[in-house]
Length: 315
Picture 1 (cartoon, rainbow, N blue to C red):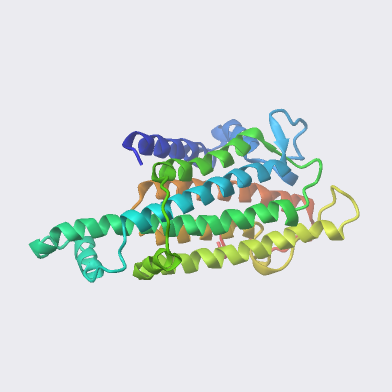
Picture 2 (tube, rainbow, N blue to C red):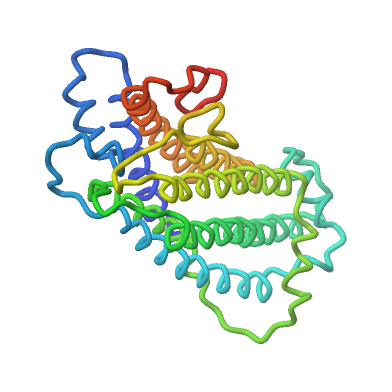
């Protein structure tokens, strides 16, 4: 990614995170600012407490940025995979692990005749790491699109602020910007495309396991939320969700989202500042929204389980 675009993207994530962090400070003087930020973050049931819906869109518009995410992530995954296969084959390089491990460990006395190969290997590893992370995101956005279309049953009155809608679209741009220069075309052999993943390290596979853990629980929690409307008599009637992580937190689908992004951070090796800034934005945004959702549950239900917390278990 070009340096100017990298800095612009990082600045955008910082600019999106700072207002949330400031609004979360326990200071009475920030009450108005807290309300302003909360107005942007509200959606669905917690927005209905607001008397006006200016600058809002139906919550079912969530499907828009998942359609965009699926289309672009799929294109980037295919293009990056083809580019990696053509420009960065690593399956036949016996010194890939030892040289790259020595480099990442900071050993400057690596044999000189491996030096050029080491640098080349590091670049190849980064290319295939991008393919790996895009593959994880492809699995995520495909499932989220399916859930938005077929699992969630949005109330006709459920809305979200247009700022939140645009923020969702903006998250997709990170993958558009990162992968747009990798569009290539080539004939290929499927085994040659899959085999390089065996060269990834333990960090990537642990990250994938964390990702999958959050992915499974988010799907379960979304299924629970989607099934609630099948058991209520009125469109705007609510019941207390139960099951899976709902037994310990009020917004387990948000908690699972944090786990998913934590898996991506871990799988990336933790060396990409842009991914860290994205993760910080996701965490601050979801914790802020979960706190408001938890307050809504407490006000709505007198018998709400006292053992549940907003989003971070046992805190």
